[in-house]
Length: 478
Ligand code: NAD
Image 1 (cartoon, rainbow, N blue to C red):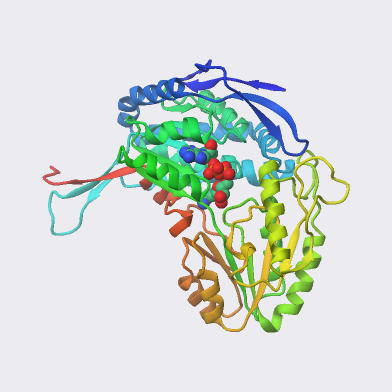
Image 2: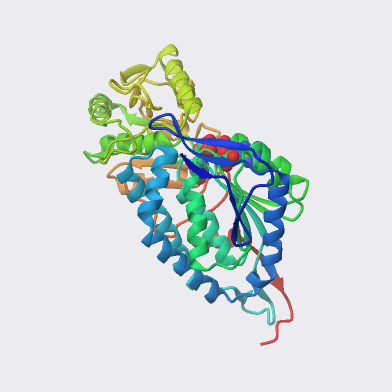
């Protein structure tokens, strides 16, 4: 078992103030694979003090130098990406090939996109014509607290750390206590890249401890958080006392509207997307709405596709899906599958219990429900497991009404070969992201939602702006 009882503070690995051990569980085996320490107030204060001390030097470092250091970080990350994939696979169960290609790969992708955006970023520019001497500048927010979840660990860490570094902020990262190993490795990369001491600090801990301490800390100016809507609300309340900026990336309940004129691969693609990462993605297309003439055929395809998805250990090579993160998520998913059955949805495939032959590990059967109705629990709650809910619709208006009838608003999807209809629906979705026909958002596009999904915009220029205060200047001398 790995002993990881240390924090990265002020450019060095330090011993935690108190002995509060926490086991990291390998979801593929249910065995403890590492022990970390949960920090307490003294650790949080020490990390925040280091970040505060490093702030004047880092904010005064020219952006080009900060960007050059991020480029060195990318080089280290790229060289050691296999280690990163191993860490992610171990801590959260992603199959090793997926962990390398998608999970660890997301880190390289985001960091590179940020560097590209930063090279074009105007740190100061005129307000406009006819207002001589009036300028707008972008200044670093200051010391920031970064709190991340376990489901896409490096995706979320790089979406926060990179723009904070580029903007000139100093920071304390608290990764999820469920999946801290990848972030500890990332701290090694930061060290190796030569990021100055105190600019980046890492303290492990849980939400009630370090998470709350960061959210309420008087010397922190901003919290950037990704995780559940529940924790997002708690953080907002705690942060209100010190009037922090709070950027929230929260849950989702994405709709995927499949019109009868969709391409032949649309349903299969939607099922595969739903099951990817074992359904543990906030932007998963978890509600499939199918236009009635295409409905019966869609159910056949969905059933066959889900039955073709293999479930196995994260340590095995291959294109299967792995376990879910922990016992409580396993139990929650089982409860929601049971609710789907009880409330009268048709179980097309999957269902309760583990897949055949897998008796240990938090493995869930890829599950598809048909004939769902908008009021069912499985259509309303974020399941965060490999469970797809399908229902028919008759008109575009009805499909949009159902799609938007959710407290969430992260990503919605539409499948059709009618361009005018596609564009109409993309604009009508109440969500931060809207995607058609299996395309992806462009490199450097912002990721974020509306309403209960939070309103952060992470990625590219928008992601850098989140870590800046705009300053309105008058009397600028040319
Ligand atoms: P979680 O909210 O329980 O935990 C996320 C992080 O917040 C962890 O580091 C945790 O320790 C910390 N935390 C928990 N309670 C806290 C509190 N009261 N104060 C401060 N910090 C606290 O979520 P999770 O179970 O780790 O992640 C799954 C959730 O994250 C899902 O709901 C998912 O949809 C959401 N998510 C959203 C996005 C997005 O970009 N919108 C991306 C990934 C995951």
